[in-house]
Length: 121
Image (cartoon, rainbow, N blue to C red; front, side, top):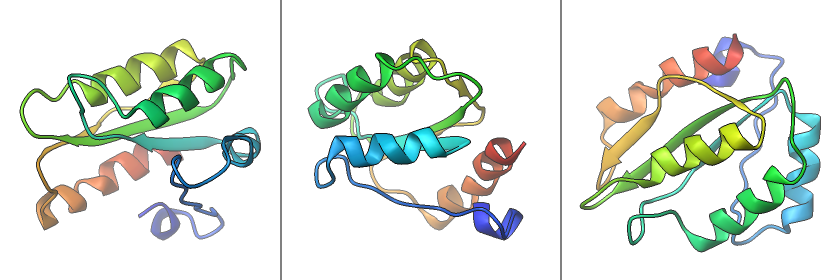
């Protein structure tokens, strides 16, 4: 969606559990915006995402935007935690967010355009 809105934008996708956290952080430094997602696990976020967010918060970024998304089975706290932690780390967290019960549908995925537009502002 972001590349459809702005063809000059480069989108890179990383798995925090499979990519060195320093490599991801290098890309965050170079970016204007990030999107971060996690499922809700035990009323929180994945521990790998939480550890990376702790590292991110130590750097106190300025003038960067972020979007949050995630899925949940029962309680759904993960997206709110991502929003709170990114705000503490100095990011301006855009609205809307994507919070999906279980698996996203085509309707949910089409709503990602709104998030992409918010990040491109």
